[in-house]
Amino acid sequence: MPVESTGTQLRLTSPDGFCHDFHALWLRENSTDESFRDPITGHKLQDAAQLPLDLSIVEAVQEDDVVDIRFSDGHRCRYGYAALREAGETPFPPELVGDKQVWKADLAPLPWHDLADLQSGPDRVLAFLGDIARLGFALVRGLPVELDGMAEMTKLIGFLRWTNSGGIADVKSIARAYDLSMTPRALEPHVDNPYRLPQPGYTLLYCLRNDAEGGESILVDGFCIAEHIRRERPDLFDALTRVPVVFRYVDEQAILEHASPFIDLWPDGSLKQTRFHGRADQVAAVDPGLLDVFYEARRLYAGMIASDDIRLRFKLEPGEMYFADNYRLFHGREPFRLESGERYMRQAYMDRDVVSSRQKTLLRDIHAQPWRPRDDDAVG
Ligand SMILES: [Fe+2]
Image (cartoon, rainbow, N blue to C red):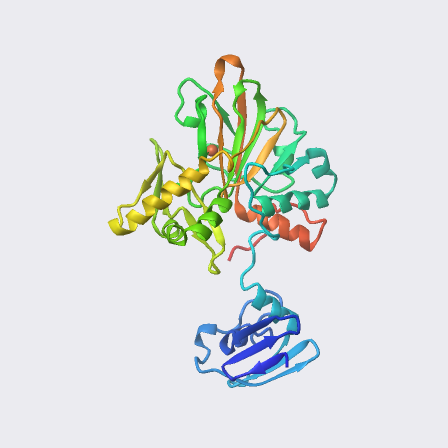
């Protein structure tokens, strides 16, 4: 029997093993009946918080692929079985569609894409976004070797995040460096700008010149490390999700601060975000007992980030770029010798909703165009 009501709950089952219990009030407020929900906007026409808390299911009848439900407040609605099942199986939407694959230094092959391919068909853009969903990054070659050459690629996805560094900004060694990235020294893997709200969603690094000795790029999969710690040391994993760390940037015109744990989770316990910025974070002065566990956890977390079998290394050539999930990956670079040549990169950021919307609209319609602000919208 695929549908079974207890009055306060409805159980949906299927011969393939699917089983989910729905709360009567959840069903009631997810009614698609036109008396309750506007068919055009999908907005509720009544205040769902005012529905009776003791509301119950009077009758639930399945007819083929429809479940017909009558409620104790007199409301009646016909629900698609498939839609109910999807709501049970996927209670909240994924940010990007696609299974994740964690990886280490030996990841092969690397997820390379050619600009000409990406420009030739939206299915190639979807494949690119699929790599972002799966691995947290993708690489592009064949970009024009000119100052804003990366824009040929980014405009296939959407608009850039504007910060006080501008849109596409230089990353090269300068005499009066105000950031370690502007010196030739090694950069330990980190996320970019964890002090911003929101933190930039994706980090884009594009190569104009890279003929100095050294200067290889490093990428680390934070989700691989987090899942390893969750498996091996759940007590330390818990501390990494609970102890806040303060990230801060201060200069003469800006004070940017944000406090959050190293690891954030979605409500179902899956990984949402991993952070690390060993040079610029400050652990919050919370309960010393909690910090005891946290410091041990941080030792393990940082140790894994530093480990050779975790760090993926590659050297970007002129006209190549990486597009990396700044909520999952840590990026860094090997030191380089200024006397031996030049290392000139350009970087930019893209917000998370721009990227996920691009993927979802392409999945809905393969001919969908990148999201652009439109001036005829009513704001509300
Ligand atoms: Fe960075």
